[in-house]
Length: 129
Image 1 (cartoon, rainbow, N blue to C red):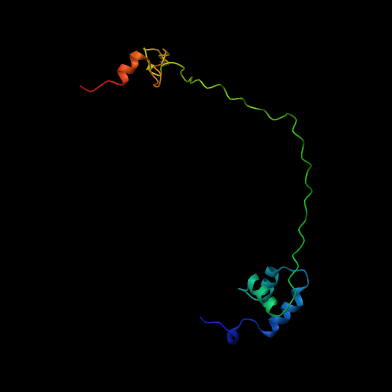
Image 2: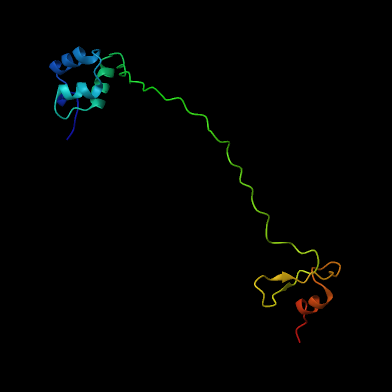
């Protein structure tokens, strides 16, 4: 369906109702309901703008009294993190697991430049034969 000025829903009677109701404090939606079934607020606002009517004043909202906020009774709780249970080894980094519940490090003196002691360096750097 094509629309244009020749089949516009705005008649002089409807324009007169729009002029009459524009500054009465009604919202655009309420004016649309008074004009005709199927009219929406955007049509009312667009027509008012095209006719040069001043913008509709928004209805004032009722301001609810805000209750004053109560100050916190307790200061915020600062949670301290527990120390890390993982300890970086100072000595040899070869991990031992001798059937105990927690594995642990060898901690023997390291060879300079690598992370293992003499005995574990032989295991780690085993030559393929």
